[in-house]
Image (cartoon, rainbow, N blue to C red; front, top):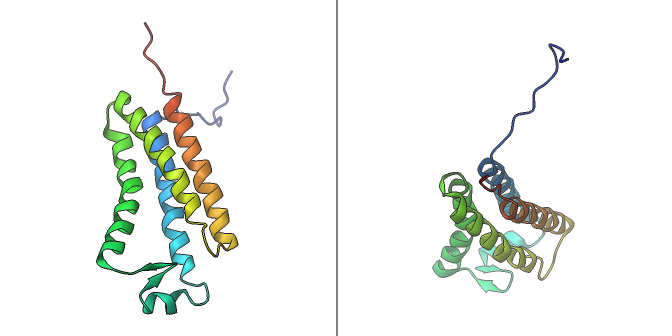
Amino acid sequence: MHTQNELKDINVSVNLKLAALWTSFMFLYVYVDHFALYMPGKVADILKGKVFVFDITQGFIFIALFLATIPMLMVFLSVILPAKINRLVNIMVAIVLIPYMLFNLAGEAWMHMVFAAVVEVILLGLIIRYAWKWPRMEA
């Protein structure tokens, strides 16, 4: 017997779970770069045209934006792609992004960067898990 105040769990589709995970991933992605600006010397390096060991050029900024666009688009693609393609794309993109997130720890890695990398890898792992276990049609 159910009481009037009992809360009802709502089944959320895999598509929306994946989109939510990609959204969470994107917030971390952006905030790590934002908070890195507070690290001593980062703004001075940027003003000198350097990020880590890379020169800031149009090409560097394009590549940085391109790499950030991938998970941004995954939010949308996770909702609209057909299940078979969606599953494959989510697994492949998440697998490719894991080493990239860990590469971001090269050089001076502060606690906020390590924390974010750990959470980002967990989120990418969950994306792989949800996509891998995508429900099958019943015969």
